[in-house]
Image (cartoon, rainbow, N blue to C red; front, side):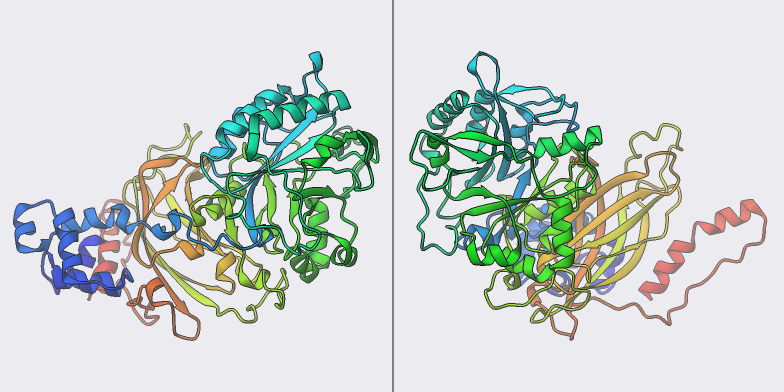
Amino acid sequence: EIYFLLVQFSSNKEFLDSKDLMMFLEAEQGMPHVTEQVSMNIIQKYEPSKEGQEKGWLSLDGFTKYLMSSECHIFDPEHKKVCQDMTQPVSHYYINASHNTYLIEDQFRGPSDITGYIRALKMGCRSIEVDAWDGTDNQPIVYTGHTMTSQIAFCSVIDAINKHAFVASEYPLILCLENHCSLQQQNIMIQHMKQTFGDKLYTNPPSVDDSYLPSPEALKHKILLKARKLPANITGFAGDITDEDEGAEMAKKVVGENTDQQNVVPNRKFKLCKELSDIVTLCKSIMFKDFPDSLQNQKCWEFCSFNEVTASKLANEYPKDFVNYNKRFLARIYPSPMRIDSSNMNPQDFWKCGCQVVAMNYQTPGLMMDLNIGWFRQNGNCGYVLRPAIMREEVSYFSANTKDSVPGVSPQLLHIKIISGQNFPKPKGSGSKGDVVDPYVYVEIHGIPADCAEQRTKTVNQNGENPIFDESFEFQINLPELAMVRFVVLDDDYIGDEFIAQYTIPFECLQPGYRHLPLQSLTGEILPHASLFVHVAITNRRGGGKPHKRGLSVRKAKRSREYANMRTILIKSVDEIFKTVIQQLREATDLR
């Protein structure tokens, strides 16, 4: 397939000269400001033969090497570093968040371990959870209350957080503290946090006149404590507040005491130490009542948590109100207490409403974590992604459940051609399968309801090394800033597990032209040498487009094109021989 591309751009020569390469870079790869020197630099870097380097020719080997290089990766390198405006209020960003960060398996019997925090923080997570309870020897412990999960020392958790808090990102870390400790052990927690975090712990009280939270830029290298807070009129050493206990919700589900899922927690009163209350400043936990009450009375530093069932109900019944609410206030969504197996909700269901903090079970791989990991790669993996302007501007209209184009946003047409694959491994757990996979590719679009779509290629039989798909798809993207593209490779001849590999990328990070995309395993590891070769073009629905984003010479398939067919003569040995040339005949027709 690369050979045909070389012949096309070299006018039937066996190599590309510098002018041929310039044409390819401009017309197909969407590269701006291409000069002959740029072409020569690529030839010198990738052409393996001395003769080619001297004459300024790029041979098939050199062209292949270039197309397989990081320069032709589908992911736009501009997004590998922080590239968005980080001076907006914190409520204007999606924030990479973890649920019950200390758990590394299920929610009811699984082990707790500090490696859960280390892994999440290294992956760019910016909101983590600590569930603190009284422990023995006057030392607080961390685990999910009312369950059989194992326990770890609070001091070990704080030490691990301090060590890794800003390894992957310098932007603020939200520490969601569920405090169930006695006053005596609350004092131990305060001492340990203050001594360990030092001036990283943000304790400046907000101004009563503030309408918005500070920006991530202003809060660099700060740890924000999210927890309950005493009323302002409490002046003594401690006061009574209502408990906040997500673990109790789940325990009720396990023992079947309550089947009605609501965003309520047990109304148990407990004593809160004033010193602990005072270090909660920008993220005061409060209970949500309704949207009219919140818009009238809620302060920008007050922070509501919703379980996913309640949040889904609000998203479906009040989609516009939810979007408007999230323009000023942070909303944290945590998994339903029914997810005892640590399965994940679809974060897109809540991102489309503007919900900033969608807490994921990092220990559970799969589609939902693929979306979460892929989404937060678009801003240098710093854990913060600026939400679409239509979700930030005071005067803007957007309904989360829109099934049509978005007012004020120009729809884009995404043209994707799946050309071929390279070095597909067998699916894991496929011991009883044949030696060679029968791969096919799904292209999925995830975003607002109007954008969600999927299409699949045909199956290529008995070829995992270099299957040729050569199929084109077109998708209309109505809200590009919230769309993601997921490529999934599956095995059609499977017994048990059909999953081979996947790659998930935000629409805004796509590079146009001929691109290779690296494939990842179910758990997110890059699969050595496994890739898809694709062509990407992005055009405006009305015919325009972003020049730097387009594969300008994208060709629409001619519907009238006819291909030669093979007639089956029912002599198996003859039919098998001639069947092998069908693909070459198709390619010859395309080339002609």
